[in-house]
Amino acid sequence: MSLPAHEELIREFAEKHLTGEENNDYHIRLKLDHTMRVLDNARAIIEAEKITGRTGELAVMAALYHDIGRFPQFARYRTFRDAESVSHGRMGVLALRGLDLPGGFSPAEWRLIRAAVGLHNAKDVNPRLRPPLATMVDVTRDADKLDIFTVILDYMEQPHTPGRAVLFRLKTDPTRCTPAVLNAVLSAGSCDYSLLRYEKDFLLLMTGWIFSLTYATSGRLLLERGLVARTFALLPEIPESEILKAKVLDHLHARGSANF
Ligand SMILES: [Fe+2]
Image (tube, rainbow, N blue to C red; front, side, top):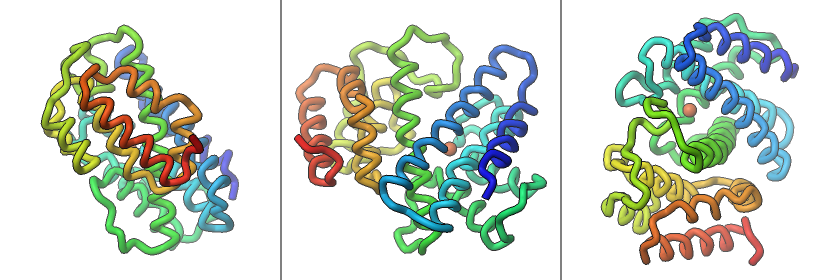
């Protein structure tokens, strides 16, 4: 497998969507940078979890191509919000079908890669998926979530430009979050995107993802990179935040992601 040829392909594909207009190009570069960091995350997970052979190579490909649909999505709809446009996973499948791809993978393997791209952003993944597809999807979803923590925390910790599509125009408020979101994440570990009102709600949603990470390595990387601490530092100072933090740390400890 020639990974550099595939990296070059996705870079060229993304850059075709640059227009010279500042706002457009910001969003295209955001997703290209995200893609490359998700690739790095996936390789770290694959190595630490000892996912070997062809399954490991296919998981790398799924991670590299997972957001290829983001570029045509933003070009056409000017948003990254799937609910206001189309599923970017589905758009990625279509983009891959239309590309002249480097060799090294059989048609059946490309079908698996496209399937993983199409499933990476599903709300829930069918637990009966079989390997290698299940592994490809699990690695990609964990690697993706790890980087979204970084993107969102960087964004929220800095004064930001209104109109950026990063947080879907959620209301900026230094202290508020939506009680229904907090309760859903505390009890079920997840909540529906439609409940989100404030930027802090997105932090709660991300916190819920920690409970659904597949690999212990992913939780370990979150902790090692300081992403758990940064998330809780930004949550409202209310007793429920402390309860959630304790629950998250217990979970990471039980999963073997942390020794403390
Ligand atoms: Fe995505």
